[in-house]
Every structure is written in structure tokens, then in C-alpha cells.
Amino acid sequence: MSFDRLSDTLIELIGISSTSGHEELVRVYIEQKLIALGMDKQVEKSGNLLATLSGTGQPLLLNAHMDRVPPGRGHIPVVRDGILYSDGTTNLGADDAAGIAIILETLTCIAEQKLPHPPIVTLFTVQEEAGLCGANGFDPTPWNISSGIVFDNAFEAGVVVSEGAAYEAFDITLTGRTGHPGKDLSQTSNVVEIFRQAQYPHGSLANDQTRILIGTIEGGSARNAIPDHLTIQGELRSFEPAEIREGYMQAIKEAFSEAAEKLNGKAEVRFTSHSKGYKLELDEPLLKTYAQVLEERGTQLQTRSTFIGSDTSGFRPQVQAFTLSTGVVNEHSFEEYVPLQPLEQIVQDTLRLLEKLAR
Image (cartoon, rainbow, N blue to C red):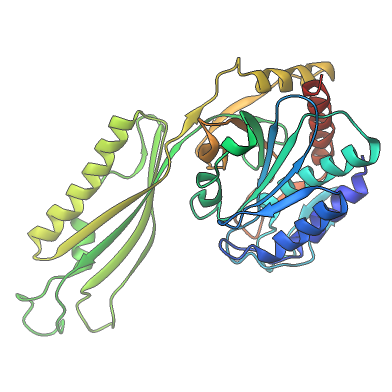
């Protein structure tokens, strides 16, 4: 285990630009590392990078995603007191470069020290930030995978996500009729007013079991023209049952349709399901083995539920995967940072876990 090598790999990854749908440069970097380790690799039709390493026991999936949210520019990060920060020109990119670095260091340690391990299938996915596209399209059947670990951010390093929220994205298009605001308004239909009058559910609901957010609103053509078009992007994240989520979705549709009809406009509401959510069972074999690894070094398994999405939602229920948090803080912002020392502990715990699985 080399702390300096782990840190250098993370810094090199952060130096490579990568956004959803444009992961090719990061993929080339990872490919070169895998080739040096002698691993068999392939690029799936989706753009996912998959590599295998033979071993003893049941195959295990190790996953991290290659994309990051915009602007996602490559840069030279700043290290202060053992913490890696963005240089302030873009988000840090540790979501999910930290997960990639953990996997690469784990594989390097196995090769160098000839450590025992089960058959390993590494999967570096595309477009996680755009709706888990790479994970949702992955077929684990040819690889005989039944369990796995997703290295991604959620909480402090080493915390396991016990429950992931369902995620529904929605897009709303409001159409009205324009006109000059100084003339007769009777034949106009103001889409901003339609939006204002729509009584849709929003905010934190049901004791914060559901969150509904509108993130972008775009429309209008000029200061002195009644706006006749408006596009809205929003999301619904929820731990509540499917039938209740369906109720929220129907209420959103009805609210905008009724407001549009009342003001002689039109509303189109489209939902796109990104994740149905999941919940771990504490007796899942891989999770129990990870808990044993932690107990051996004198600590306890910590689990928490989260609204934050990850590739785990795409893999389950076919694969009993769980998200192991990398400890990235303020992800998706220019204030993003990650403590480095805990990443080394995750690698050590992963190596010990692999040793146990190889018995």
C-alpha cells in the first residue's frame, strides 16, 4: 500500500476533464493502468470500461463512475493539511475520481504483493451523473456477479449507504400566447402566470421522506413581450412506497395541466425514472464480511440512508451491491474537497475483505 501513489493517482485523475458523455480521456487513463497490471479489459457499447482479474471464489464487482458534473474541467488541485481541494476554477472532481483511485490502488497492491482475492470484475461506468446510464445498462449475467462494492461519495469515508431513495426526473413545457404588454391582454396567455398558479407539491414532504425540487426555469423572449413558452426541470426523490410516489407525480401533472387550462395555455409534463430506490438487508453476505473487517480493527459498521444517487441503484436487485462512501464533501460545487488519509484506510479494508472472500 502506497499512500503517495494513491494521492498521485487521484491528483492525476482530477487533472483530466470529464463530464457525462465525455469520459473518453479518463477511460484512456484507466485503460493504461489496467494494461500495466496485465488485466483483460473491454469497452462496452455504452462506453463502460470493464476489466477482469481471475481469482478464487465467487466473482466480486468493484465499481466507480468516470464522469463528473459540469464544468468538470481538469485542473491541479490544492493540498492543505492532508485535504485535497479544488483550485477554485471548477469542481474538484473527487466525485468520483476518489472511487477510481481506490480501485486502481487496490488492484496494484494485489499485483505487487500477490495478495489472495476472489475473481474481480471492475466496472468504470459512464453517465452516472446523468441518470445512472452506464449502471442501468450493465448486464452482470455473463460475469456471474452476485455482489459488489460501489465506491462513491455519500457520507464520511467508510460509511455504507443502507437505503437509496427513488429518483424521478421531470420536464415540464408550458405553452401560452404572446403579445405586447401595453396592448389588449385578453388574447394572451402568460406562461409565468401559469407557473405561479400551479399548486404542485414541492419541498420536503412526509417528515422529509420525499423531496420535490424545481432546479431550472427558462423562458420568455423579451422584456416587453408576454412570455409564451417556459421549460422547467425538476426532480422527485423519495423513500416512500411506489404508490405514494405515483400520487405525487400525478399531482404535479394535474397542477400544471389545470393551471394551463385555466389561463388558456398548454402544459406537457414528462417523467423519467432514474432509480426505483433500494434498501440493504443487514444479513447480506458481503455486507456482513465488511462488518467483520471493521470489527477486526476495532470499529463498527456505520450505515445511513441517503437521497444521493449512485450506481448501486442501477445494479440492484440483480447484484447485491452497496455504496461505500469515499468521504467527499460539498460534491458538485467549487467548494468540494476530500480528506486523503481515509482513502488509504478504505484500500486497506478492501484488501482485507478480498482476502476473506478468497478463502
